[in-house]
Length: 249
Length: 132
View 1: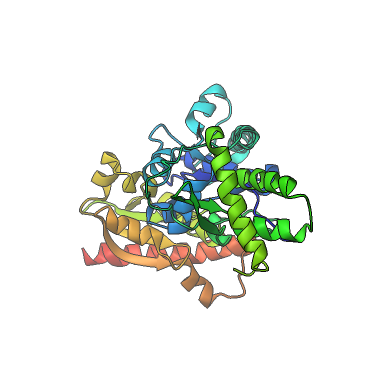
View 2: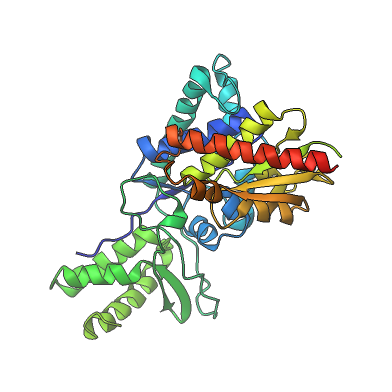
C-alpha cells in the first residue's frame, strides 16, 4: 500500500535570543512537536526560512502554519506572511504571559518552574490551534480557468513517517503534478501517490473511484466547491491515462 | 567600538541549534557580559530598527548549528559585520564522544559541548577586544 503524506501544520517559532519569551516560544513549540501533537505537526526553522530556504517557504505556502512569537514585534508571523502565506494562527507569548503574571521565567537561558509552566500553557494553546486548523477544510482558492496561469511551485516538503519531531526540511517533498483543469495548468499535491493507492485498491466501479479520487485529492489541495466538477473531470482523465499506462508514467 | 554581538542561529530542528544558542547565552550572560550582547536574529532580518542600530558598526560573532550558515547569512543580509563565523559542527568534530541526543533540553553531552563552544566564543571575543 502506498503511504500518503498526512496533512500537517507547520509551527514557526521566533526563538528570539534576547528575551526569555523567545525561549518560551521555542520550548513550547518543541513540546507540541515532541509530546502533544507529534503526528500532526512539523517545525519550520525560522532562520532558514529567512535565509531563503526553498523547502521551508514552499511548505508554508502549501500547508497551514502557526507563528509563535515571543513579543509584539511578531517576527515569525511577519516573516511567514512576507515570504510564504499568512499564518493560519498567531500565538504571542507575551500576551499569554500577561494572563498569568505569577508565571515568570528565571532567565532567557533557564526557564525555571514558572517559565516551564508558562511554556506548558503556551504549548497547550498551540495544540488547541492545531486541532482547530486540522478540523477545518483546506482553504479553497478559485483558479482563473481559461487563462494560462503559471503552475505553482512543484515542491512542498513533508512526508515524515518517523515518529519524532521533525523540521519540514527533513521530510523530503510532497510530489506535485501539473494537471490541466479546463485548460489551465494547476499544480496538484500528492496526485501520483494518490493514483498509485487507488490502483492498488483494485477494481471498483468507475463512479466510485472517481469520487474517491476527488475526495483524496481534496485532503491535500484546496478545491473551490463551484469548480469541483471541472477538477473531477481533469483528475479522472489523468487517472485513466495513469491506469492505462500501468501506473508507470 | 561597542559591545561585540554574539548571534546564534537557534535552529529549532536539531540539537546543534540549541547548543549554539546555549553557548551564546553562556558568553553573553555569564563569562563575558561586560563586552558582549546579543540581538534577536529574526528581528534583525525583519528590519527592526533597534536591532539594526545595535549591530551597526559592531563586530558580530555568528554561531551556526548546521552547514547552511543561516546566522552568518542573515547577519550579512542585514548589513552586519561578521568578525567570526563559528559552527557547532566544528566543535563537535573535535569532541565526537559528546554526541547530543536531545533538542529541547540538552542532555549531558549537549551541555558539555555548549560549554566548550562557549569557551571558543569567549576566546574569539578576547581576540577582538585585544585587537581594538
